[in-house]
Image 1 (cartoon, rainbow, N blue to C red):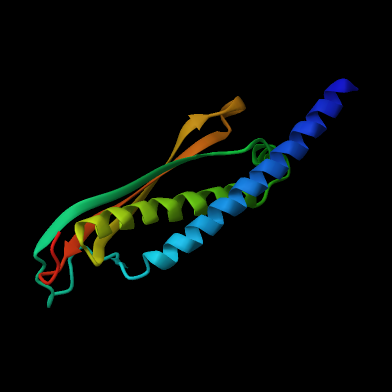
Image 2: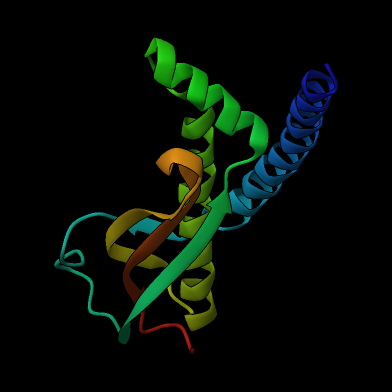
Length: 152
């Protein structure tokens, strides 16, 4: 009986703290996305033909985010019944957006207003119990383009 009570307490704590931290992180992401909205992201391999940059440089943003206990529990239930694992989708969304923001911050520090040839890499870097996802890493990288009218 005590094991069930401890399990329920862990679930409630995992849900509460996980939700609190996730909400806080999303607020931070939204605020910083507004601050960096002037830096364009372009997926093509080459900059626009009419652009002659003063400087181009590789920029990257990297983040590792761990899965909380409650999300891991929900994902294990989804493995039994099948279907979308929405708890991991929000984890990957936050990680992707955070990596892009860190890449944009590096580009802004160079004086760039555009990053082209952007790529995203995702990896599970830690396997939890029974090879469940424990933490994910997202790397965003691209080529920052500093225009002639800016000093780095």
